[in-house]
Length: 116
Length: 115
Image: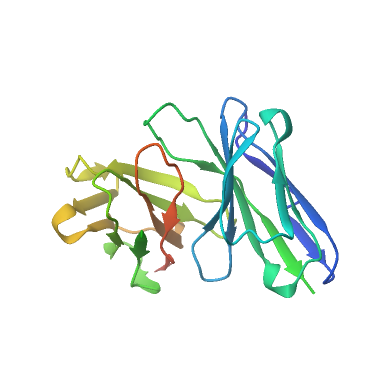
């Protein structure tokens, strides 16, 4: 397994268009997370899944955002009617959750979205 | 509420100098994890260290060392004999309670090592 894979690496879209990003986690990891990082800031939590269940969504995740993890494997993050404020790096991470033992995430390289 | 403060926005040092990156955190939880991640220009966040709130022992890994002080809510990171490859943005992060794996990140410190 080569780690967490995100596609595409870069996406430029016109305002108002829909975009979809994909994340393939480490295969044995049961948790998957989406974060957003804007320029000069640290990553901010968006949502996370345990297997196929979406357990928490941040208030940052407006109605235009939707995330899925069918079958508990890869995940997609869709943004509808993109706005210039959506321009950011979208980071995916995965982890193996075992009770209260948290070793930390493995992050992907991110998808950089530019809305023009 | 949880908060992580990295007051140093940018630091530049000459190669081979030592440098310390500061991290101060706030949480009401008595149990928590603290992390440091490195983000090179490629963008991927690279895990450096995890420390739980029960363990205040300092840790050393090669040229890297971490000083955790609960009394001052600080978790500082020192690079000894810095190298150009250490140039990156470094993030401190807090996981406020065991079992909840959501991380709160600081705003990062951009470290530039001048050859």
